Figure (cartoon, rainbow, N blue to C red):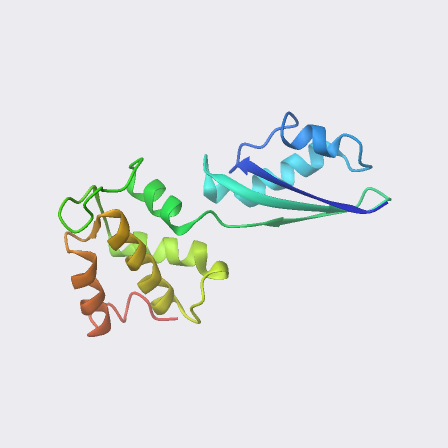
Length: 158
C-alpha cells in the first residue's frame, strides 16, 4: 500500500497538524520524522508556501521531494515586499543587489529552463521587470543589458 502525498507547507515551519498530519496519519510513516526532514529541506524558504511530495512504503520508509516557490515569491521574499508594482516600468517597489539575484537564481535553478547561473539570473531579472524591482538601482532592462555586455561575468561564473 505504498503511496504519495502532495501538500503545500510553510518553509521550515511544517508541523504534525494540518495539512500534513491528517494526510500522514493513516500511513505507516513516523509523522515526526517526516516533519523534521521537511523542515530541514525547506529551511531556505522560511515562511513561503513550498510544494512537498512525500512518497512512502508499506514498511514506513519515505522520501521527500521539495519543489521551489515561484520566482516572483522568491523575489518578494528577498526584497521584503508584499505585492509588485501596478506600473512596473514607472513605479519601483524594491531594489535588489546582484548577489541577491544570484541567490534567487540558484534557489530556482532546478525549475528554470536555463543551463547555467548567468541565464538563470536573466530569468530572475525578467521577473524583476514584471514586479517593478530595480537591481542595484538600475531598471531591470538596463541591468540585463549590462549583464549581456559582460559587466557581471565574474559574479555569475560557474
